[in-house]
Length: 223
Ligand SMILES: *Cc1c(COP(=O)(O)O)cnc(C)c1O
Image (cartoon, rainbow, N blue to C red; front, side, top):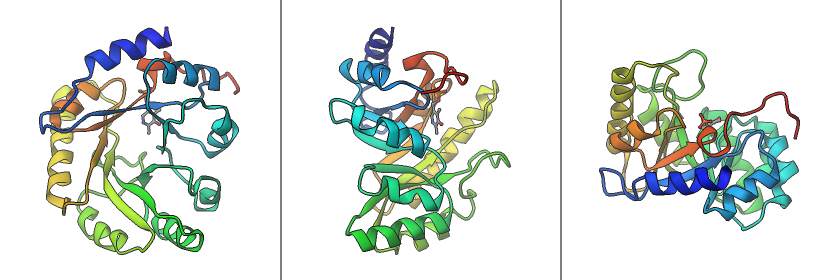
């Protein structure tokens, strides 16, 4: 099933978005076994994204095929040490303290980290990230940190059936991305299993899919 899902998705996802940018598929691997993740990689997945540091650590050496590693979840500053140097792109720089600590630890270890700034585009109290209005000034602060490279923005749209609202927010994100981009941006990470098509149509160039690759997550199952 996983193999077929990956094949179908790789066919279905347009090679380029409406801005002519290549669209990267990141497999969201939370709660998946190393075996299932490896099946996805064998079927053509090149990028995997973890949410939880413990899972990332437990499965790190069990993953075959040397995929690019993304960290897509909320990250506590005291856990940076487990990820430093092993993550190719952090999607969720969602507060200044985290960015500062990642830079500080990286500076000591001689490691430059690539990050995306998470934007709370739906202005939801349940979600982390910087507010739309503060994004630009936060970027000026974070890009001055010596051991970080800000490569773009990440957003999670609200869970809603209101397609018009989702399209509006996705377009607003792309506008913000273009307005903030000083030439250093490469990734707008936006789109999950339920909304990736409209996100790519609005100008996302990186989508994070879990359910459409692995099926419904089993939260009762332990790794
Ligand atoms: C779980 C998760 C995804 C994937 O969600 P699906 O709806 O299963 O595709 C994407 N991004 C983040 C940050 C996630 O935690």
